[in-house]
Structure formats: C-alpha cells, structure tokens
Image (cartoon, rainbow, N blue to C red):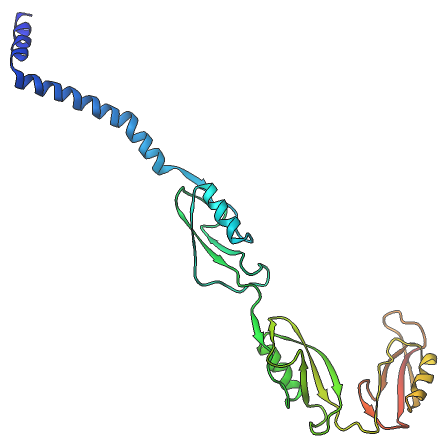
Length: 253
C-alpha cells in the first residue's frame, strides 16, 4: 500500500509523466467514442439503401422529381431509342431497373423514347405493283389500297403515284395507298364492285354503266350470305371497260 502511495506521489510531482497519463486517458476515451458512436453513424450513412422507383413511361420532369425524392441522382444518355409504345420524350429504359435495391445517392441512367421512327415515302412512279410492295416493305411501310387511275403515258398496271405522295415523312407501320395506271381510258368506264349486293338490284346499274349482264354462275354460300348475293364478277372490279362489255357474275345459290 505504501508503495502505491509513493508511486502516485511521484507521478503527481513529475509533470511530464502526468501529462502522458492524461493523454493516454484522453486517447482511450476518444477511441471508445469513435468506435461506439461515430463509426456506426458514418457507416450507417454509407450503407443506407433505397428502392429504385418505376420511371418508364414517365415524363422527364416527373422521372427526375421521383428520383430526387427517393434519394438518387440521374443521368440522361445522349442516344435515345425509337419505340412504338412509349411516346417521344418519355423514359424508355432505366438502369438500375425499377424495384432494385441500391445505395442512396447512386446515379440512375435514363434513356428517352424517340417515339415511332419516321421514314420518307419512296418514289414508286414507274414501278410495277410487285416492286412497289417490296419498296414499301423495305421502308417499314404497309401497302394499302390499290387504286386505278387513267394516264396517257404510263402503261397499264404501272404505278403513277402514292397517297400520301412520295417524299413526305410517314411513321413506320403507316399505310400507303398506291395509284396504278389503268392505261388510256378514253371512251371506257370503270367497273365498280358489286360484291354483297343482290343480283336483281345490280341489273339496272350494269345497264346504266353501258355494260351487259353475261353469264350467271351459282355457288353455295360459305359465310351465311343470302341467296342471290353477288360474290364476284368477271372482268374484275376496277377495270376500265368499253361499252357493251359483258359482265359475268358469281352469286350465292
């Protein structure tokens, strides 16, 4: 006991040793505080996570606001993508995907939709119907109606123009009508479609057009058509015909 008292007295009388002891105590307390208080707080901030919100289909402003509110950053990729479902300017792709758990503060990369891709309607003038179909298909367009029109110089069956006209921008998947030449039609009359009409009602129309009723062939109906309904004609509808041409009919028996 006396030895301890003498040691304590010696420490109190030795200022250097006393300072060292004080610093040892202070460092020990700091170590405890850092280990038990500071590190858990700092580590917790680094490890905080959140769920990436669903952004696809949202406007740019709404997506940015949603990410900011959720604690994430955002970056727009320069290259957009064409898409038939998501309108232009809306979020098309996000990375990480919606629902993923990520560290707060992480950057979510966004890709904008460019909407439907637009193409220029090709010039089909002078092409055959088959060539026109191939050209439209390659451009991502759909061939619509084939309309016959009179023309002095373009041969029969050759494309005169398109509707809408060549050079106009159209969206991929749009339907383009094709006008083909019926040749020189001076003195000729266009044969309309009589499909679905009753033959008795067609007689007067045929005579009014300057044609004559030819043979009538009866066949069984396949889709519940009423007896006497016109199925098709020969020559075909859309042909330009001279006066007194005989029109043959196929009707439902």
